[in-house]
Length: 180
Image 1 (cartoon, rainbow, N blue to C red):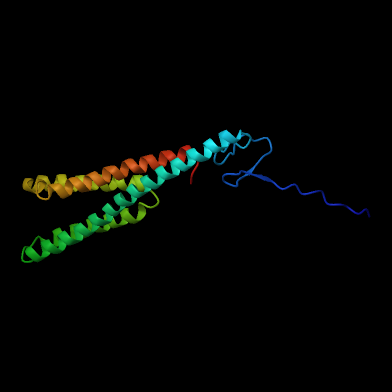
Image 2 (spheres, rainbow, N blue to C red):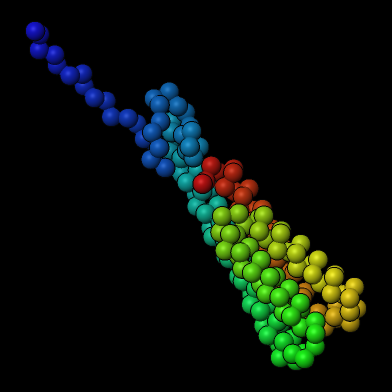
């Protein structure tokens, strides 16, 4: 039996930027797009652009957190409204229906808020749609309710729209840069 000498193990090349394994013939990293065979200037340009985009992601993620918090705040507002309504109208026969409706709405916004970490755009659009529908239905039942707390309603809708825009921007940046 002949002695077999193990073949030399050639370590795999790795991307300097994201440490993904790359092939010798790759010009760019297939994961992050880093110019593996680019000039030093091209590589530095890539890194500086990515840093700028990471700053943008930080800013957008901050807006997303604020919008997600708005979903939680809405949940709290519905619980608070249910308690206030119950306290003011406890002798009214319809009080249970109103309180249960508000508690269900609070639960829905709570679920949207917690799920928004995975799917922020879908949750924020759903939350905004639901909030607007509730306000329209309240206005149909009682037209004066539209003007009650109008400033708070505008602020809530503004935060939700800002969050939706941020979610779209974050998804765009992540898609363009292959960021998970």
